[in-house]
Picture 1: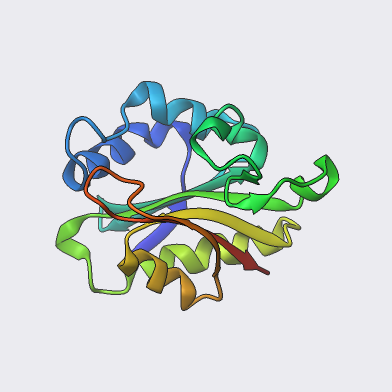
Picture 2: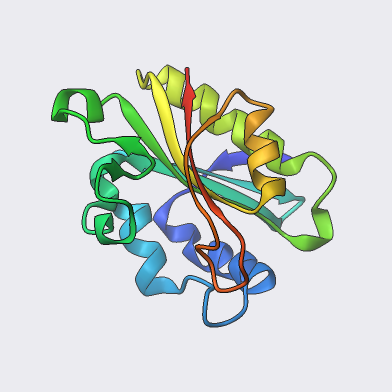
Length: 169
């Protein structure tokens, strides 16, 4: 398996992974993927088995996610207490880590998470903020030091909770 930088021209590969993982109503399409991949400061990685894309991870500055605050509790911004612009500039928002279901359980999600953490450190970030779906995903991020700072019980239609986490680097 190899991990490479993720660029906007990889959007079709990201979409192909999304289609395998999520139902059509949830899978991100070109109109949703491209703004994330094109936003200044976005850092992403794609994992391949040979030439086959099997997973990706992407994060970016908190500014990438402006406008989403209506989805979150009033005193939280993307899982963290509202911060000054100077502090926000030191926080990477971990947008997604997605692995093809055929490859789950092989440690590939963890490899992608580690790559994003190492890259965030090299870019001068001092923490990562993320919102996490499902207990399994929370457990995975906890292995890397993430702490839950807030939870919304039953946030998703299937009854799963949404956990806001911080990972200090």
